[in-house]
Length: 88
Image 1 (tube, one colour):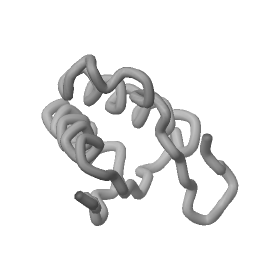
Image 2: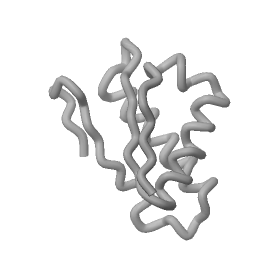
Image 3: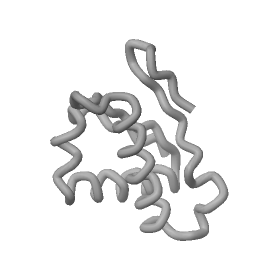
């Protein structure tokens, strides 16, 4: 779910709720794809500020997804790099 019209759009990812046994790489790719879809829906014309709050395995999955975004050049092209928070 996400709130499109708030000053700071928020989204709670559910893409890996039932699939964490697939491995960090598969889950990270799913999160990567979800982040790009959220970007397309919320802010297609401008860069979007992005923060992650995650816990334990979610932190590893998120690091993998951020790595995919960075590797493809999409992290700084589509998003304003901001504080990334990992809670473990």
